[in-house]
Image (cartoon, rainbow, N blue to C red; front, side, top):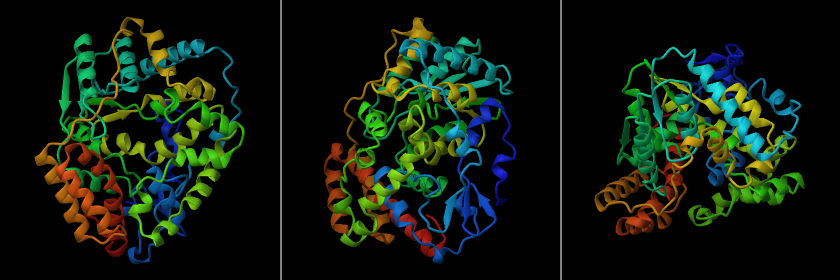
Length: 452
């Protein structure tokens, strides 16, 4: 179904738990020169054989895995900018003046109140909590328990490589300590189907969300009496994800080229993966210019690095997890995007997030009785079993043989073969092959208007 332009903001009021809509989540797509919009490009009136790839946008996506601002893979399709974006970005924010511990303590109380207020009004009577071994979901869980509500059960999914099984172990231990039923979800061996569904769900705008389909399948097997919670933006806003002292310094010194190069990171396999023509077409210089232009939009924010990633990675890629996959049946709340929580975190200076300890400190100060419970630590991923890697990698190879794409067989097939031989390398190969699969499916859509 399509909608008339600008309708996304009409139902947004000041309800704290709907505050995320002011950020344009989930994104609303529009065809340039058209009055129609839709939350999926597949619902737009398109002339598929006339679609053209936006080379600058693609240059960014191939390096970051998400698009910036209003960019999409296509020149003719844009994401509608939220009506309130400029007001949100340019509101006068007084930078927090207290100490690190003062801020951590106050943040814990703000979050606890926001959760209690929401839980006092939510219609659903059962709570299911997707729980990892990290901070975002744990903070939500502690706040639920502090409100007096009980959690029906927690779920944890085995993450794909390069992740290990620490999330499962830590979440199980935490639930045992809290006397909460826990269910582990196995990562199903359907990599290609999950990846293609991810491209469809995100309108070709996300590369890393495929694994969440296992969590979504569980939530979608429940009924509407449940509410679930997702830690959307928690890592960005309160844990300093992607923030570093170096990035903050470069932002303040306006050293845009150096900052953009750090954000784009090294070229990795890209020069070998693409032909010389396509590597020039989707060049690093194009990506640098686009990233620099986007970085400058957040210069006035107390934590500009966090805002850059919030408005781009979170808004354009990660938000499809709660607002695409997970919310088909159950209500999904995103507490880090509640109004009062966001407004408090917005004022915190970037220096508080330079060492990744702010969120841990806030949780420890607010819930000292749980401070002894460990978080997951990254350890080497377990190698893929022979049957799984043969099935997964041969399926990828067949797909790439059947569907044209701009990546040479000399890059693809030796690596697939090496992945079948080595369980450790297979973990890396599935990650590498996401880009050729993406480009093949994108070109298929442009040619035929169909998706696999």
